[in-house]
Length: 204
Image (cartoon, rainbow, N blue to C red; front, side):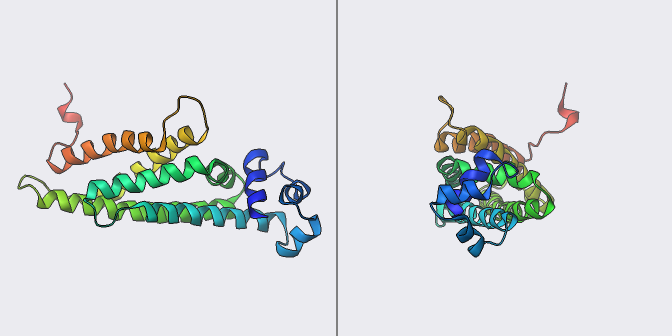
């Protein structure tokens, strides 16, 4: 039933998806849907929670724990893009439908995003510490800098995921999307740690 719910909500939208349609997709009777899930809202919430948990699990499982910091970040991003590309309905449910159908649903996605941001913050913090140990010129990043970089990275990944998940011919693969973001983020992080951050005073 949850598979059918995710598909119906992602493709038709919350307002247009009916319990009759979901029951038909699931191959069960409408009363059976209501037996397990009391309302359309409850079904929508259950779908959001399942897809959110699956995405977070995929990211955590993809990270190569004993690898260098850049490899850990790369593998986590690859896991994120691979999951969203393989589950486009789940991604649409989370990134489009759940955010626009009221606060109670949006809160579920906010909680998932906060968990991902915290995890990425830990990865970036570990990367910064590793690079700082490797060079005398490297500086230590402030906590606000690490948090800001994590938020920016997650936001960029979400935008790229829309690109990889929509199935357009010629779009990037999950690994290509991860490489694009790593080239953008890792080079910038390296410059920042070397004290070469951008400032308006450096502009002509």
